[in-house]
Amino acid sequence: MPKTTGIQETKLRWKQHDNLVSYAKDAWDIAYGSSGTVSAVSEALTQAGWPADRVTKEGIDWLKAQLIRIGHVDKLKLDGLKEERKTVIGGGLSVLSALLDLFSIEELMVTPGALRNGVLYDLLDREDESKDTRALTVSGLRKAFQADSAQAHRVSKIASEFLKKLQTFEEGSSEWTRLQKKISWAAQLHEIGNVISHTDSHKHGAYILENTDTPGFAKHELHRLSLLVLGHKGKLRKLDIDFEDEHLVCQLLSLRLAVILCHARRDPEHSAVQLKKSKTIDRCFELTIDPLWAQRFPQSNHLLQQEALAWQKTSWKLRIQMA
Image 1 (spheres, helix red, strand yellow):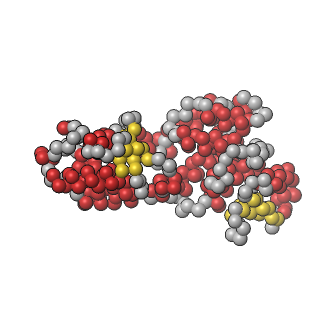
Image 2 (cartoon, helix red, strand yellow; image 1 turned 90 degrees about the vertical axis):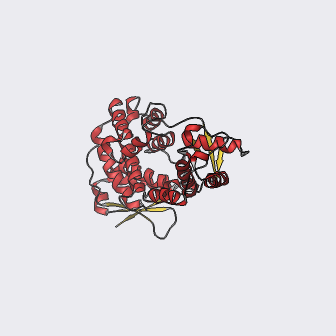
Image 3 (tube, one colour; image 1 turned 30 degrees about the vertical axis):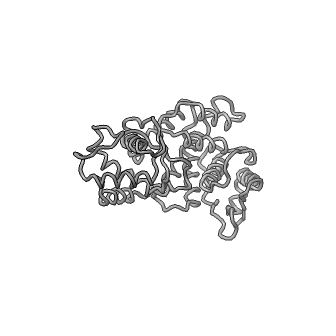
C-alpha cells in the first residue's frame, strides 16, 4: 500500500533534476496521462463514482486512503481494478500522487494512447549530443537540402555567442543548454530554403521544416525552429511570433545579427560588436559598435543600422551606440 515515505522518495528523486522549472504551471494548458497506472487509477475512480477519463488530486487522495485502510494487497478488492494491477497499484499511486503535487496538477486527463517503448531513454540520450536524434535530424536535413556547412557553422558560432550575452539562465543549466541547442540548429538550417529559391528562401526553409519528417522533434519544438528560420531575415512586423516570449526574442535577435555579420560568407571580425540587454530601458537591447570597425566594414554597419530600424516596428528596441 502507498506510504508517505514512498511519495516523499519520489519527490526527492524528481527534485534532484534542475529542469522542473520547464514544466511550471504557467508553461502548459492541459496535463495528460496514459497507459498502466493512470488507466487503472482512472477506472477504479470511475467505478467508485468519480468523473470518467480524468484523475483529480481529490480522487488520488481518496483512493490512497482506501488502500491504506485495506492495508494489504491480498485483501484488496476495488471495482475496476484488474487482478494483475493489485500488486503494483500502491507504488504506481505513490508516484502519481507525487507528480501531481510536484507539478501542481489539479486534474489529469486520461488518454487511451500510450508512449512508445524507449521514449524515456530517447529523452535521456538528448543530454548526449552524439545520441540526440534531433541533432542527427538537423544534420541530415542540412545535407539533404545542400545548405552550406561552413556558413552554417559561422552563423551558429556567432549566434550562440550573442545569445550567451542575453541569457538569464545559469551557464550549463538545462534551460541554458536547451536554448543554445535550438539556436545552433536554427543556424544550421537557416539556408535550407535556398535549394528551392534564393528569393524568399527564409519562407521556403520554414515551410520545409513544417512539412518534412523530422524524427525526434515534438510539434511545438519544430514550430519554434521554423519560426527562427522564417525570421532570420526579412521584415519583423510581418512575423507571426509571440514577442512576449523573451527567450524566443533573444534567440531571434541573436540569429539575425549573426546572419548580418556573416553576410560576406567569411569569418567576420565581430569582437568590436557587443550586444547586451539594457539595464535602464525595458524590452531594449543595446549594440555597441567600435567606430573604426564601422569604417572598415561599412556594409555590415549599414545592415546593423537597418536592423535597429526593423526592431522599432516591434514591441522591442535595438539601440546602437558607437563607442
